[in-house]
Amino acid sequence: MGTFALCIRRSASSLASVCGRRVARAQAVSTIFNRWSLAPKPSLLRPFISSGFPYSTATERLQSDQTLVQVIDSELNHAFVVEDHDVEEETTASSDFPFKIEDNTGHRTVTLTREYNGEHIKVEVSMPGLAMDENEDDMDDNEDGDERNEKVNESSIPLVVTVTKKSGLSLEFSCTAFPDEIVIDGLSVNPPENSSEEQLAYDGPDFQELDENMRKSFHKFLETRGIKASATDFLYEYMMKKDSREYLLWLNKLKTFVQE
Image 1 (tube, rainbow, N blue to C red):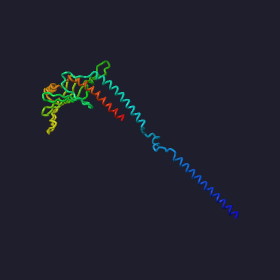
Image 2 (cartoon, rainbow, N blue to C red):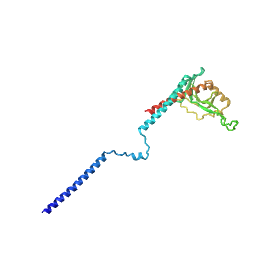
Image 3 (cartoon, rainbow, N blue to C red):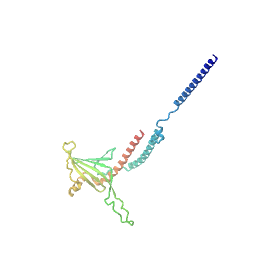
Image 4 (spheres, rainbow, N blue to C red):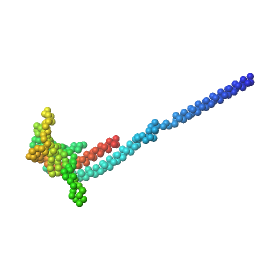
């Protein structure tokens, strides 16, 4: 009987020991789990970031935009100085300039209009370009024998001249204005705008292929309507200043976009 009781006590003691160890182990696991759940989780993007994955932060974007705005402001200040200088030296047309100037703000063109003996004359003036001298590739016979001649450039202005009769029928000239002459590059006859008549399929021959007397007569035709080379210098200066004004407008729009 004593032996049996002793066995019972030993079994109970062993069971209590085992249960105690299991409870302790469960508490330890619970503690570890809780600590892990409270710890900050690593970002899922960390592997990509650490391997050099390209990304842009809000701070970087802000710094980049601020730098761009500073550059635009610097250019605006310079452009304002140029514009102020142009205002001081305002270009005015001569007294014999017969056209009304319609400045197309936001565009790189200017429209000239006038009425002449029942005709409506419109001239579309584009930004000046440069015309190269045909002999620009000639070699100069100087002491070195291998230096090129300096390129001879003339300011030139593209013009589209439209002369419209009362009937609506019009004659359109494509021209290039130089300081000493107006060159006709081509011409076409156009029906009235609201007419059902179709545009002539035949545009006519190349202007340079026309009879010389006819070419001279067309030049005189334009000259009597105010399309003269004497106005080229004025138009050139006017268009260059317009280019500065349009550039200022463009810079301000660009700055507005970046700051939004």
